Image 1: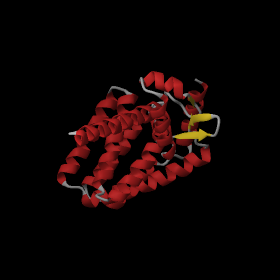
Image 2 (image 1 turned 90 degrees about the horizontal axis):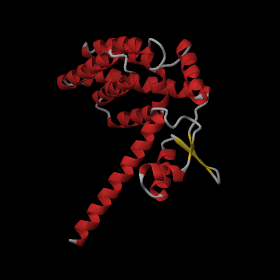
Image 3 (image 1 turned 180 degrees about the vertical axis):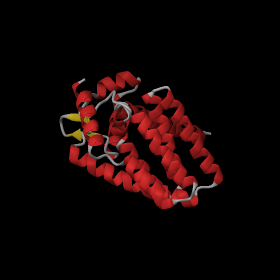
Image 4 (image 1 turned 45 degrees about the vertical axis):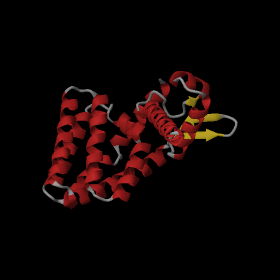
Length: 230
């Protein structure tokens, strides 16, 4: 009986720890804790109704993911990415997703294709309502469906890890004028290629969709500057 109670406590503690990490990660992703923001352990503990110990442990977890930087004797801040680092990470992101798209075109089951189409339709509804926040979450589900369709677990883990690291910046992209419509059109090309089984086309379309360069990079930098100013 004691073993059962102890095991239950461990599960509950683990669940709370994971929930806390996800909640703070989400605040970073949506920009409520913007890049460069100082993360005060006492304030976060009060906000989430916990002691400073689980907050400190959560910040260490987020630091291991690259979302937080812990500075000796100065505390933790939300990680900032410089322009060059952003370009490099999006470059890798686009290539990882291109591989996912190519494999998904070959390996997706009919049920997985139906799920991708459903995710694509959900993005359309969010686009039509001009709800950038809703589109962000539907867009994430759309991309995750493609990752899963690759049927390569190592690739899925690596791609999702980098996706999570870039979440704050991918979200900012969607706030640029007319980006929702352009994003949905790019999705449509990806879906058509995957359903048609054209791996090379799918890889090309998703690479172009994810990569930031030229005007899209300038727009992202402008959005980031506005966020930091706010």
